[in-house]
Length: 102
Image 1 (cartoon, helix red, strand yellow):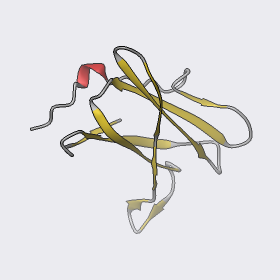
Image 2 (tube, rainbow, N blue to C red):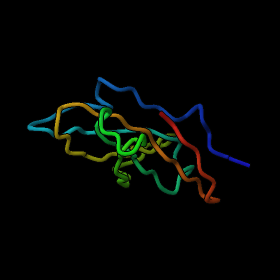
Image 3 (cartoon, one colour):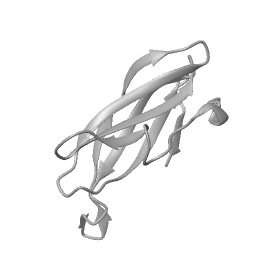
């Protein structure tokens, strides 16, 4: 059974949780409940890149950048070739249960 506090997960594209800083780099942030998640992976790629009918993507781990009393802040930076990005998250809790979030 998944024990992740889904109500504490927060990510919103297009604001401070997903923004471009320079060139083709996009900064991605997601917040979770403190001490709820062991690791987070980002699956990302060009939304128009398909190979044999399957979406072509890459997998990248997020870093735990900080914590408050209630939340954990996870971030990463990805390079986009064509200024467009499709992505979703894989969250793994302390018991190794997996939850996908987009």
